[in-house]
Image (cartoon, rainbow, N blue to C red; front, side, top):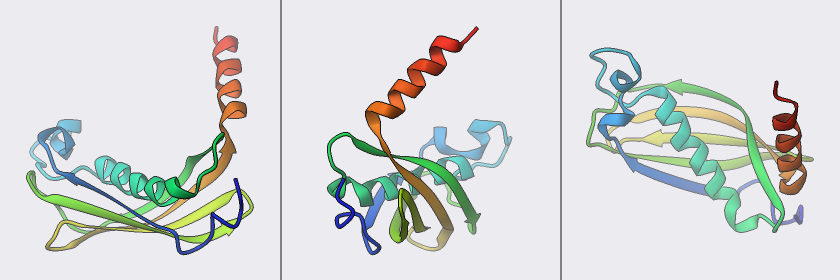
Length: 135
């Protein structure tokens, strides 16, 4: 992967309509029929991945390492949530994103997300080695 391709300012977006399976109530928070924080984090992560997609070289991928999110407003079923990501910092393999999400009426989340660039072959070899050690 060329470092010149992965630089601050890269932007990405993801979007989803909130479905019944996305609600906090679907994850055991009875009666809370709004988008779950877990689902919102997934959408935010997808925006970061989308920001990097055009700049990634074959054999490279990124993995998420940290997400710090403020869930600011509830979003009912049927609303469309749009997540945006901007790469704010590149420090070697470490990539730091500023993320936001909106449901068309409110900013529903702000977050910082850290990803790391990794060699995909090496990563999956490590996964296979871990599986082989499983009792």
